[in-house]
Amino acid sequence: MTATMDLWPIGNCQVSALVDRNGRFVWGCLPRVDGDPAFSSLLDDSPRAGEGAFGFWEIDLEGSVETTQEYLRNTPVLVTRHTDADGNAIEVVDFCPRFRRHDRMYRPVAFCRIVRPVAGSPRIRVRLRPATNWGAARAERTRGSNHVRYLLDGGTVRLSTNAPVGWIEEERLFRVERPLHFFLGPDESFTDELSAAMDAMLKRTIDEWRHWVRGLATPVEWQAAVIRSAITLKLCQHEETGAIVAALTTSIPEHAGSQRNWDYRYCWIRDAYYTVQALNRLGALDVLEGYLEYLRNIVDNAAGGHIQPLYGVGGEAILTEREAPALSGYRGMGPVRVGNQAYEQVQHDAYGQIVLSNAQAFFDQRLFRMGGTADFEALEPIGERAWASYDKADAGLWELRTKSHVHTYSAAMCWAACDRLANVAAVLGLDERAVFWRERADTMRATIETEAWREDTQRLSATFGGDDLDASLIQLLDLRFVAPNDPRFRGTLAAVEEGLRRGSHMLRYAIPDDFGMPETAFNVCTFWLIEALHATGRIGDARELLEEMLSRRTVAGLLSEDIDPETGELWGNYPQTYSLVGLINSAVLLSRPWGDVR
Image (tube, rainbow, N blue to C red; front, side):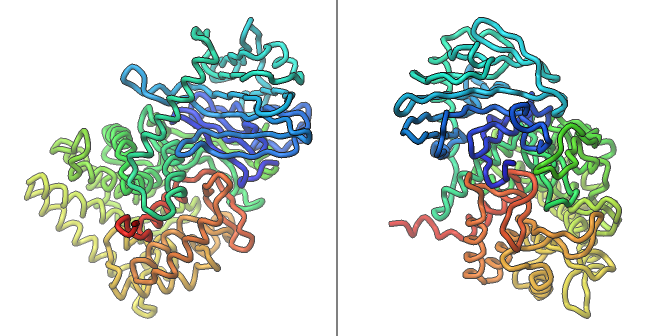
């Protein structure tokens, strides 16, 4: 079964696919990231594997003995090279078209594969077997003169190719003597000459991504890791609406047999805030601008200012959770879940993240559309909800399903909402509103400092009236709720590190939750620790920990959500935005300046 370590994402901010170490498409949803997976074999370890398997797309070299893979520099275009024992070789170029055309971004629901003979007389077999109805059946197909149509639940897709169509249908071995082009996309006639059109798409897609990367303000150190993380975060944006998904997958468990299998193909207000924050540090303002448009629509539709923790990429509010019984799960570890019931939860920190994400628009003069008085007024109901909710119980950022507390992190995020509204009102010259929101923020701060402080242990607690530890307490520094030299933060950091650090990795918490005791560390928490170590002067420790995390990346240079602190094995949905955000933020903080380069 495919391991997380072996997956290479490709995409175009409309659709995406994960390609395994054999060059096989094993995950990809249509017509968008939260759709039905046409390529579902990543989550299928059932007995039907073998000749009867489906939910994948592979291009195999007969007798292949070696496969190597790499991205073209500064792009999500993947090149897979297969070689057999006699030296015959091919390369397969995989990409999803994305480039500017007719003054707008062309990003079709399409996957492109170009097969080129490299050496000798290679023979290949193409097996394209999309699934439908969440892995319940192999898609039916019909044939045309130069194409094959696949009938999926979400609509019909068409494979246009200059390879012999009958041989594709019959999955026959045949020799590759010229470049072969495969375009799996909308059920429309391919009017242009296929090979020339796809070669042009490839060039323009490469140029588009390299132009985007060229605009990034990357640190001088760890550039390749930061660029790859930034490209992948961009792939997690549904560019049509601006929404940013937490990950490209569903139901990869947090650890073996844990039942902690969740669908992350939706836009969490929290995760998206962290994503735009990291990309802002690199100057990728297009992601922020797209997301702010998405947020403004969410805020407009929020009844009485109420904000859910997450929404669909089209702004859908109802994301009913169910199971897909036809799929056995990653390595057979089901269930496979579709939807996420967390949309019904109460998570007060979302109010802070809404305002924090929007606040930059009132200060950043580089933006095409800066925030104005009307935008501020639209945010004030969010501030009212933050004020009403900050000292009330919620499910917290870790989305506990059967427990509720007044979480310090949620309270501090609500404080941040009112604090930033005061800042925005001041810059807009709305002095009365600035005073109004500042007074509320000051009241909230005083309450949090009183209710979360533990005099006996000289630290902050993760909950009001409790005595528990949570890695999210480190984030009070990033929120500017505490300063690095504040003794209260120093005491809290020492307690969190002692209680939750396991070698080079940080747990979220170390108490039982809805599913028992957590067994894996949460990668972003380790990056939060790195940021705190940097802020408190432990630069050497921070750099050492960052290098350790960089060594844990997959062959594609990415990270999933969780890691086993004993074995270093990655678990959880992949690629995960939180983890890549942490990598970018830590690298930007710790890198030596460009001025040192001579």
